[in-house]
Image 1 (cartoon, rainbow, N blue to C red):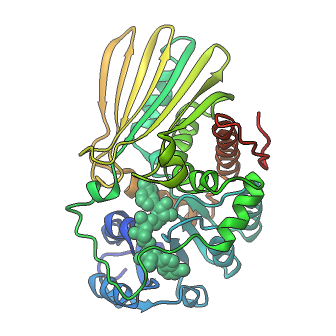
Image 2 (spheres, rainbow, N blue to C red):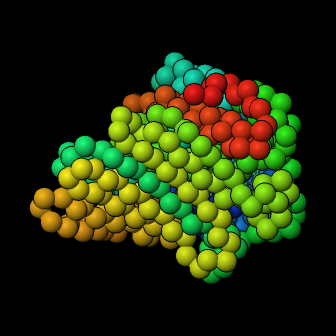
Amino acid sequence: MRNGIDQSRLISVGVVGLGTIAQVAHLPNLVDLSNRFRVVAVADLSAQLAEEISKRLPGPVRATTDWRDLCTDPAIDALLLLTPGDHSSMAADGLSAGKHVFAEKPLCYTVAEAATLGKQSRAAGLVLQVGYMKMHEAVLAKAREALGTIGDLRSVRVIVRHPSDESQLRDAGIVRFDDVDAVVPPSSQAADQTRVALGEVPEEYGRLYRDVLHGSLIHELSLLRAVLGHLPQSIESATAWPIDQLTSLNGGPPCVSAEGIFAADARFQIDWLWTPDQPTYYEQLEIVGTAGSIELRLPPPYATKRTAELVVDNSDGINRIDGGTDSAFNRELRAFHEAVSSGTPGLDAEGVGEDVAWLQRLTTRLALDRAVTVSSEAGSS
Ligand SMILES: NC(=O)c1ccc[n+]([C@@H]2O[C@H](COP(=O)([O-])OP(=O)(O)OC[C@H]3O[C@@H](n4cnc5c(N)ncnc54)[C@H](O)[C@@H]3O)[C@@H](O)[C@H]2O)c1
């Protein structure tokens, strides 16, 4: 024991990518969980940002611009990958270097990579966890319990109203420097993976697939899996609009809606709406059965101290359940610590692969809406 901390339970981490999500959520939570984690090194393409963040953390913390330094550092047990885009090649390299890996979503763009990474982590006995923090909301266990009280399922609906990051992060005090370009063009690797995922498609569908579906809507899939145990069975129709936002991103990304069959006799609808100037992010999952309903209201992603709230309406009356103050971001890091400490590989590999396959089917439907054919890796049904 040193400073009241059991050193054997401390996991030494290297953090890669020190932008928005690192500064708003993961770094404060790592500090808050100092009885579980110790940040020993940070990496960012921006040397100034890496230096600045290393100084702000309880130290000593090494700063570097080359994330591979962290792979070869024997003092590091685990990597947190918080860079933009997908994290498949970094995750594979981290696992090959013998590190446990926590990767922000999306993990990968192809079903094949999800399977390969799952196999790699299991074979190496290393944890690979994806940053699906919504799956860790405290009230989810009660939502699952309530499913047994609402009769036969009839409808599952998700709505997201997504403001721009500028509007959500106005007062977040994110530190950035101009020693690297702020906008990194999509890597050729991302383009190659998109080709494997979707075949040859107009670039707007590649962008939609990567930036909107994997960048945000994928969270809703992880939430559906966490609460209801599976994804919607089939997508009957889907549309992305306004059209100039789909084709040129004029005014931001397009809105996306899809509907179809969730399961026998239950419909689903998802509406992901780009509402750039709306002051507050809004997200709700509504589950309706023949004998009651469940509403789950999720907090804005950058309101990292807030938690989901649940309303269950059944034969017992209307019951409102508050998620308390134990945030999903904090809980997901505790789950990572638990998985590493107990030697339980953490990647829900099948779940990640299912999400990727579902997003490929959704893209196929979205393209069909404009008579564009997509031959996705996952097929169309
Ligand atoms: N869970 C959530 O709700 C949530 C919310 C926002 C973002 N995210 C995810 O977090 C990740 C990062 O998003 P962000 O908004 O923080 O991005 P960001 O652009 O604000 O920050 C990313 C940082 O990574 C650095 N970087 C890029 N490539 C690098 C490399 N090869 N080596 C070292 N550093 C590198 C950049 O310089 C930048 O500082 C994305 O995968 C995103 O999907 C998740």
